[in-house]
Length: 256
Image 1 (cartoon, one colour):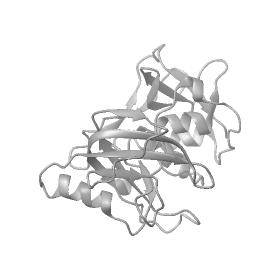
Image 2 (spheres, one colour):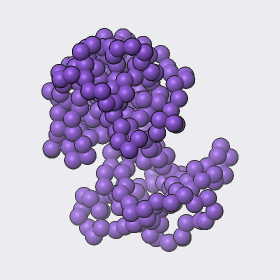
Image 3 (cartoon, helix red, strand yellow):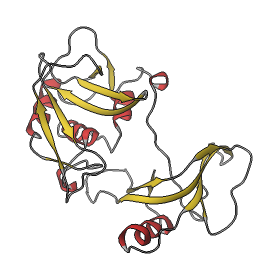
Image 4 (cartoon, helix red, strand yellow):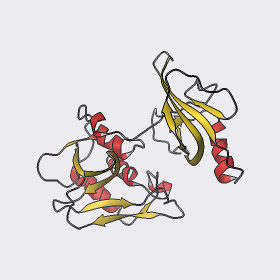
């Protein structure tokens, strides 16, 4: 989940006490609340016995224009339910995510999307070219893989972060997104054989979990290899795979 920075530090303090200060693990119940433009509740997702396991602060850069600073937190939980009717319990062990930001912490949840939810309309025109993008990705081979990383300043990049970095090197301004976000927002179907600069998306249980960049017609591809266990202190790597392109996966094309 991610939100704009506010003065409310309750979720960060929960993460700090649990993960940084090695205090007793405190599990909490919570709700993610979807509201319409007038603030009326539309849907609520309740989660149970949750604890924070990862926090990422805002990027400290000066070229974001009108964009605002965003922090992210990852929460592990033991169950989730959809509840449109009931209000959350009012006690100290319940986080209400989605209330007025002056009262509570307002998060926007993100999730991977299934193929049925994805549309090919309104794909934006990207700056640069497919060939230059592929070159940018090849230049990243050998650099560290860090889960959640988006720039070299993060100590390394993950699969979607490295692709966003390669695109932004050509004058694009794409903020942090998951592999499924890239699929939905920036790619379109491929007709015919894969070309240099195409993306190969992999799924697990129907959900997009990984993306690679194809660098030639023979199927060579830049692959950010790693997972949640890979941090700055324990990085994976960004590698070049030259074996034959597997039949699995879905090839999509960025619109340059």
